[in-house]
Length: 235
Length: 268
Image (cartoon, rainbow over all chains, first blue to last red):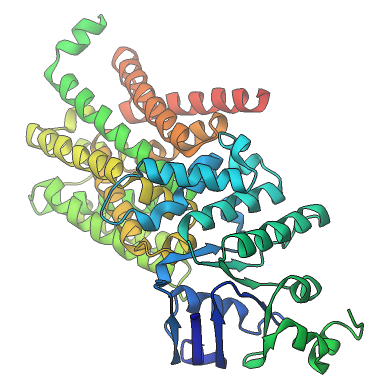
């Protein structure tokens, strides 16, 4: 059953179309990597999927009872967050924001969910530490735990390994794959790392201001497009 | 003169009650404002507040009744401007605050001239607080405190990561506006005591001091509140006994506190 479907989607800034002709469909448990060069419309598509940007044309449909506000979003790291005084627990707990509803404060269920996700991401012993003092890899695992608090079905990750060292990058990819396989959570990831994309993902969406390729990762690997994009080397 | 004598004056009692509440509000809001890079909004609003108070005096209107709505509207406007990409937010603040200051100065010079009342708007005076002002101040600061406590989880989320908060369905715009409105009210209330030129330090200093030593959001908020109220009480007491201007004395105590916390933060 399709959990996410884009039909002939176009997105624009101030009337100027930056991405058009995007049509794809994902089933529960799929792992999609969105690739493409800078300015190809990847970040714009993320905004569209999150409902922060209304489509100029076409539509985005969620299935399986998913709402746009129930996506576990891991944003690109901004400078703003890096010097912010907040404990790991506070950051992860803020992922439960969308389950507050009319309540004003978090309850015991929210706190338990935050604790469980910290444990799963291996950051539970850092709970009282300050987010700004953590290493880049630890910070990303904290943000992944926060994203997991916000969703049961779909993770949307915007360049989650940018700026991480190779070890932390590998750990991050493994954690994401683990969540994808064990919890049957659908993953949509924007990535610059095309080699990892074809290794971990089940599906690839290649953008260049329009949809250039959508299909299974195995088929993408065999395509001429991928060969060019990968720099002529077969993987 | 003893502390007891100081407390026996009615104007001092009023000043202490209002001052403690306003300091508390300023500290709580200040943490979010500093972290969201909105510190300059507080400064801009105080100049607008001065303009509004000066015009109200010239027209013989109740100062707070004019200044509160004007400054609240400006706060909402400034927020919109700093969110739009077309106008640079900091330039807009400079533009609006200096214009308001100019209008205030002109209306003062055309009517009463630079008298002590105008000087009290600029530099603050604990004598300037009338009884209705005090009652209104207490009510408004209670409202600010209540809203801050009620919406604490949402304000944290919007301050820490607005993108994430919006993605999970939080109306970030609404909470940003709430912050701006609460700040506007606090600025106007604090202005009578601190003066237009000094009120923004009441918002910024406690948050900055707390951030030198505390590492979680909750502890920064609590620490800023304690710092703010203690510095206020020390500053007022010092100004009473040393006969120095109230607002300036409070800022001086805050500066000392910031220096001490910075040293403690470096050694840690």
